[in-house]
Length: 95
Image (cartoon, rainbow, N blue to C red; front, side, top):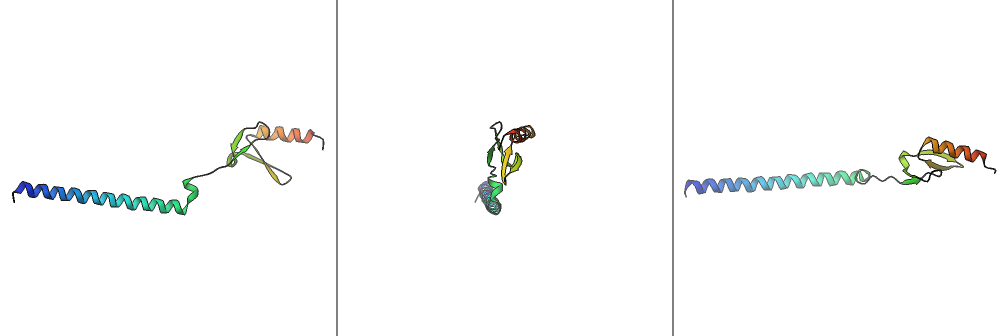
């Protein structure tokens, strides 16, 4: 068999082996990432409920809202200013 054909076959075999190893490594990496996501689903889709400020009616993520508890129920505000306005108005209302 001529020398160039042998070299071409060796190069082709190395290329096929290289591609197969690459696919195997990517597959293992994807499985590892899927396993990590299954262990920590909150990292895959972090969910933060939106709550409405009772004063200005703006929606804010609950984790960023300023919380005021009245009668055991939480009220969520977008800012200290809205919270203070609510407390001032609530204090002036009869009842």
